[in-house]
Picture: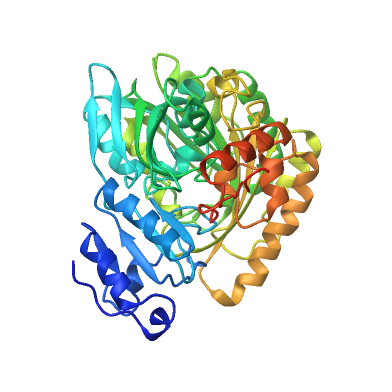
Length: 472
């Protein structure tokens, strides 16, 4: 297809004739600097990311992905891979290389009888859920509907259904992968089992996953509870949350958070903008005891706002979208912890004391359940023994506040990491260095991943990620 001539800087790296030849064999769109779409397409969810690739290859099918990978290798271009473009590190975009963009590959086919779904790598969870919920089915995935299914699943993937049905990667039956050599392989329990192990938690290190086949579960209506209390009740609330989660059945997922009460219809105007502590729960499956579980959360302390009711699963999947809009500047830190000790609760209660952005927050996610019942060596996802995941979210709009907001997150993280099991959730890692990647997998898993990388990507073509270098 025709393309606009590249900029002068592009010509110094790639000749127009090479780009034109690549474009003619490409069924999707080849977008270059200076084209009308370029400025909007190069933007990703995290507003801090401002990168300028030489080529954005918006793929129409698997053949386009293969062509783009081979073109990148032939021209020694750095490769970034974009699915949903939602991860905080911004690795879906690069400077000076090629972005292999799957965002137009949104095919999905639901088999309601077998309770399986085939889904292409450009889908978001909102799009995925819309198709599967038409059949009253779902698989665990995400907390924000605009997140891509690909990146979340490859890094593990937890959401409102994970304590009942496991991680996204635990429900992955097979995947089609374009490797660094341009081969298309199917990874499953019967084909390329080593690759199947690695893509379930090992991120995009081993190839570009163009399609996924997931197991589905009967889910339609869930029971949701959301209660805000004044931040002065943070200690009492977190101590309650510690006890509440210890007794929760698997069909109850939840998180506690310290955050500013947002503008929302169910929050009184006088409480909007106040620093609060909140608990959010979601109960799936049989809902006979849902009101009892909800009441135990609602009757604690002095709520300033609350909302509890049955709702469609798609509604709770979209409920966090307003507090995670695209274009905000984001810097996150996370740690898996074994327990909400009194000492950790003491640190968390003061988390918002020095936060100057109203969007800054700290989330404490309850893990375990079905997540912890999968063997630690069954997939590349680590820390299945963790009871909680603590996530520090710095989010703001003004670039002049970058240093201040990053310092807030890092200072708080330094106090929290003393309670860590040793690593972070890879989907919430920024560009934090090799040691953080290694610690987030643990030594045994990391060693196995480096061996796998040597087999499938010995030249480290797919390195713009939470990178696993090839072993020797």
